[in-house]
Picture 1 (cartoon, rainbow, N blue to C red):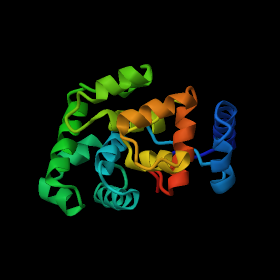
Picture 2 (cartoon, rainbow, N blue to C red; picture 1 turned 60 degrees about the horizontal axis):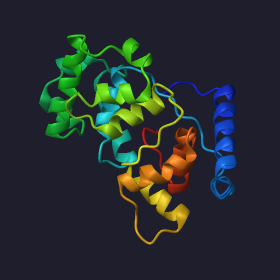
Picture 3 (tube, rainbow, N blue to C red; picture 1 turned 60 degrees about the vertical axis):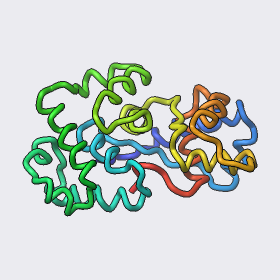
Picture 4 (cartoon, rainbow, N blue to C red; picture 1 turned 180 degrees about the vertical axis):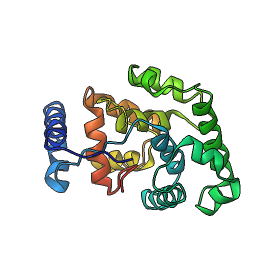
Length: 213
């Protein structure tokens, strides 16, 4: 679920953006064009991990619509128990593909069996979090990075395999061709240790943000 955004959250993100601008003054052009991005906070729980699965390879709008249907089916509280108690057909009717239903049920089973511990994840560094999450069927590096950024609040992540962020970098640098994931990751290193803030800037520059409403 989305968490309340406070004035402190906004001030913290603005400081991170300004620190990134000190490293790369050209970023000021993004702020001038689009304004500062809004913080995005999600709860570190099953529901957010499920929404990450839903969001894979979908537009922000489509993923949000499917997530809303799943939430309504679960009486506005998405838990692993409720997902296990729903039939595959019910989840398909919400808009999940057969493969994503399989992933969702597998994720729920990991919570049921306590193979995945949110308290443990919150104590890990980003690389360890990502390493843990990619062991889950249906999770890749992008999924781990998105969860680490939005749910765990890690400040130095740039999900380089995100298509919107690749296109944003292409526009930002005036490149003839869209950089691939490896190239985007190399470019983003210039913004460390504020890559999460720059990710939000670039999503706004592109026009859509992952896991937004």
